[in-house]
Amino acid sequence: MNFLMILPLTGLSLIFLALLFTPMEKVFPAKPGQRFFRPAWIMDLCYFLGQYFLWGGLVAYALGYFSYWLNGILPAGFRQSVAAQAWWLQAIEVILLSDFLIYWAHRLQHKVGFLWRFHKVHHSAEHLDWLAAHREHPLDTIYTVGIINLPAILLGFPLETIAGFIAFRGIWAIYIHSNVRLPIGPLRMLIGAPELHHWHHDLDRDAGNYANISPLMDILFGTYTCPEHEPEKFGIKETFPKNYAGQMIHPLLPDAVADKIFKPKATQAGTENQKPPE
Image 1 (cartoon, rainbow, N blue to C red):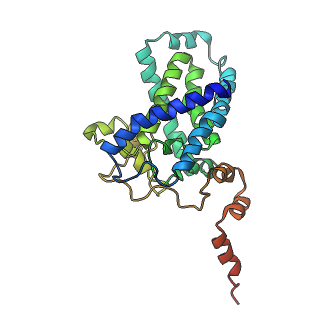
Image 2 (image 1 turned 60 degrees about the vertical axis):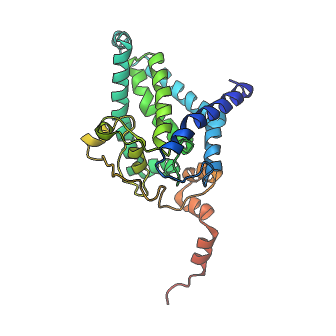
Image 3 (image 1 turned 30 degrees about the horizontal axis):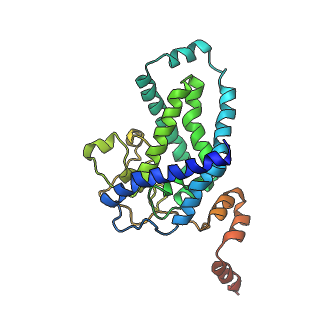
């Protein structure tokens, strides 16, 4: 797909998502008064454009590369029996399988330092809305997309099922990040909602709610939380760059190098001016 094709698709996608989610955020706001052009809006727009123009192809290539090596691992008869199932049954199986896998993969992103250095790019957003959902480091995206889709490919689920699931999960991910609060009562124990994922983005790195489509895994493994109010603050506690290029580069560097390059100048000056104890 060349640039001339990507450009109008990107514009149409941006308009479609804005028209779909902005009215919901205005009528059912989780944080009333949050402006459309809120702080860091431009940076999240850069992430949106980066996914379409730069990183989407990289993620698709990585998925295709690993898919090629997985196709022949399981017996063809088993894979054919999986593909022969009714579409609705395939959909349920793919959702349950991917939710289980992404739950544990997501918990690891918060517990393992190497994974967190890339995942914290996503959590650096201090304002949540439909656009903030696109704030992801491409290597973090490859990790997540691989965990979600490669096992389904290995088992023999047809590409039509997987493609439909990818489209659904993409819209769902944007919805649960949106500045929307639509309390659904007891159903929130079965169906994920923005109010659950907003608490996952709380300033506390271990706030819970690691599941995506359904919170069942969080309930089963003791990480479910959903107070009746919104978190006071989103974001991360670590010092982190406030620009797109910095957030792309920072996770790739050793901590000592990254801290020296990206530490705020005022902090560096204060450290240098401190006299050693006598």
